[in-house]
Image (cartoon, rainbow, N blue to C red; front, side, top):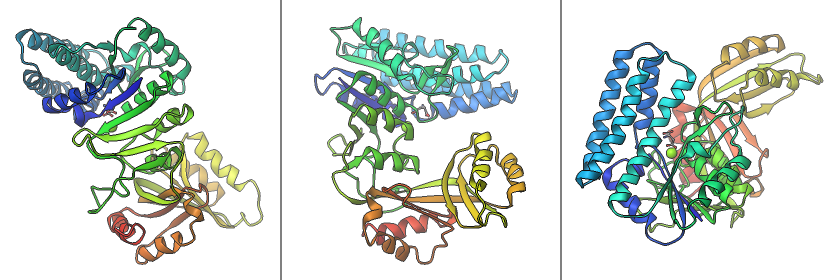
Length: 439
Ligand code: ASP
Ligand code: MG
């Protein structure tokens, strides 16, 4: 079994859906195709939901109408036959009627999740009408029947495995399955999701549950690049990454992959391939157990970072100081990304500002705090990178004129991270591209 996941841009136009069709029918391997919502849809649904939450029903209604018009145009171009158009339009009607009914109900978190689920429900159902029109045998597997998370929002891989296998057993002669990315049920049985960008996560969970031979993530770029191609001119695709390297890169800002999607693939040792719908012949990136080589592979940048320095005159020779600090972050469920310490001060970074105010207030009794927003973590990643003897020299030489406020070295053997001001990010990435990658 092979898993193929297509992101929003890969299904974002009728032309792209035709390309997806070519890709999924190019060989006879049994496959599960995981689809995202059409590009722009989830953002539109978030806006609709926000408008409803704010009580602005007029605005919400207007946005629903706009989105519906987009889908009407889309299906008209996607499907050619009269009966196909009828079916597709009936699906669009069903989902937009649902959204219009929601306008009349009072807002809740559960309702929000229902709204957000419409994108993947629409994309998969419409794609199936399209397949039917092309006479391609397939089965739509409803993700809400097998994908689930527990009370902590963690996927229940055991139960996913059982339910998915049971579902598949009903269709033993079939080879092509379509399912929704992103959406799932929570511990209360309500519709929920795996967070933004979660379709990758769905794909790797499905791959793990079925012990698939490969999990292919199809996007609009040929694999993971050594640097951000939106910012830096010359970048190259990285052919091989280990799960460790990929996890560091995804977590520290490489936009190509949902960070959580690494662990299921790693646990079940399933190679993940990052491929390009527009350039299907390109090698892309293969993520597997071994790194294939040692040394620097790529750099990623994570924005929206806040640094907090806590300075205590009493930390000198004091124990328990770090614990007290960490407890404050734990209490507010805010995870720390980077940390550096000296005898009298501790600096940490966080990326979630939700409880910043409360955290600072509770840290006050422990020492003076200094908060800096608009920071960026630059992570240079590569297998055993900390062991290469000239890497630090190269990094610091390239960034000679960029103020660096934190450095993290040695925490992971595969990652060296620096904290800089976000306004210096572009220059820093360019300088590293030249000085570290020689590009
Ligand atoms: N449609 C969802 C989003 O835009 C999930 C995904 O595309 O991965 O976040
Ligand atoms: Mg995505």
